[in-house]
Length: 445
Image: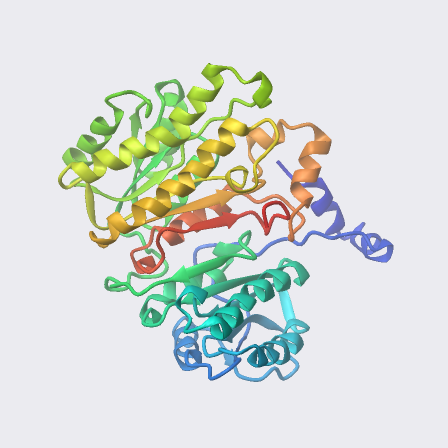
């Protein structure tokens, strides 16, 4: 569904009037199109503290065809990368201000700000921990101050994880992260497989996507297929026609399966082993809502939501781990949570419980998968433009669109691109985490 207000305020006829009246003007976001360069202009790479990653980051950007600057000389900047991994005292935060402040004034529309820091939990004492945690407040505040569709995010790079940084840095600089802002992602030491072609990072891999017949699930399947994967599209038999349409369009296969059935986990595990020799990527996207105030919630509404959104994921993961060959080496599992699971939502206690539970299962499963060289993460979408949101009352829909730093709803592809990044073999250093795809929603921030 088109965002009438964004389109109106960016039109040639009414755009000028909007500016004169001082009305908010949601930007048209830069999103990824195959063949696009990583950045559409130069990147400024600066440091606060010793800046130990400046050279490595500069080499990575140049290898991806980007122009690198070490001083802002008046030109518009497509990105600013601040290496604050060497900042260990509050006094060094002044260098963050002096480096970022002038650069932000030169940031182009849909520009990217990426701050690199160290995890506070790994700090040697309260002073360093406080300084590292201060970067979280800086990144999230910069994201709220950014204009023109620009984003800001923080990557916490553990000591020894420098070689695992590339895929995450690329994601946050690229158009793939258009609706991801104000996020903190930790990169841990990991053995990164031989780098795949960044333009087709899933070439030769097999991916399973549940709830793939429509909406976000269909977009996930399309995005993984675009990037080289063979996709097994899974949905309930009642969605068989739509499921086949998606699978045929992307050159994948359709598997009609009620994931809440008692034998569903075993059937799925056997299917991927017998037909594909195992799966590289599992995306738990299937989900339902059965909204009602808790005081009026009946057992059927509660049980059905928990069964689909949470219990099915737990049971399928257990079957995949127990079935020999079901998960290939360097497998990636990505679960779809929700902002409701982080912030809660009136009339959605059952849904919020299930989606918060997904975050818990991700955090608990990550150590089990690490032994296999596998990872598990979650994405938490905010307001995404789907058939469901299009059916909302006008006022509710408009509020949902505007209560984030980008002042607009996201698209299904924004969720899909984030899942695609987490599913890459090169993202081995990111596990056990939940990344919000919400334009930095002002709820649950």
